[in-house]
Length: 360
Image 1 (cartoon, one colour):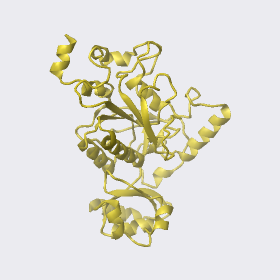
Image 2 (spheres, helix red, strand yellow; image 1 turned 90 degrees about the vertical axis):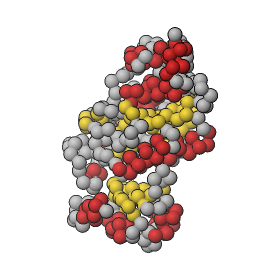
Image 3 (cartoon, one colour; image 1 turned 180 degrees about the vertical axis):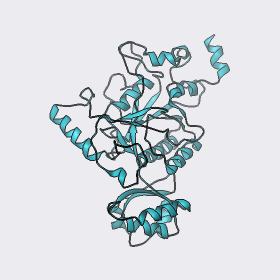
């Protein structure tokens, strides 16, 4: 109730402060298809829903939509709405491990993965099914010889297609740390025998939204229902803004048996598209990418203070500006990404005792 009162106060501020539209996540008391019957009819007939780009959620009761101040105010007054949050941007988070020319990178050795490889390299040994790792990031370069065998599918939440080809490079880097092929060349990942599913929620600038992160959790829950197996999700992303809606979605995913691993203590570096990216094209294409980054990016690079929802929508260039970040909102089972590189190996082992015996 307090959140709705605060939101109502925000709507009363002058239109000059807030523009005419904003993307919101609306949390309802009931699942969307039931809740929509109680929402203002003038706003939620089929034509209006299409114009507002309504996208329903499964992992939480609610939906995302483009709303005017008047529409948002009517939702608050409908009695069906529990909470309204502006859609928040999520970014790639840089880490300290970079792939090199050695067969076993330092980071892989640091987490003692080679000591476990005589038992398993990511394949389940306790009869519970395969290990599936969902990398929620910028996509994957599935054409790479290091990742081709591990890649089993995914989804692109930026374009709405099932082609999560990486146009930034970060998701491929993360996937390589997890599962680069053990093929006597290049580098090897921590658990090269796991299956990788790439869920692209971040664009060519390394930015996206919590809306798509929530949809990615929905996707994993449904996929787990469809094919079974053990599921781990990795997120090397975040921002300076937290979200109660997102926290609820993570908890629901955790309750469904998914183990989440998230970056902790990193920072966001705003980049122009890299010429070293696997998908970088000629200079003219780079110019188009840079222009797209400038148009699309919506996090203020001049301040790390928490701005108003409308102030967050200022368009800025995709420049190299570091923005300190807080951790993603996480349930108790959501662990530090420092351990994410060994998650699949831990699940694959039947127990600590069994693992110890096999390593003797």
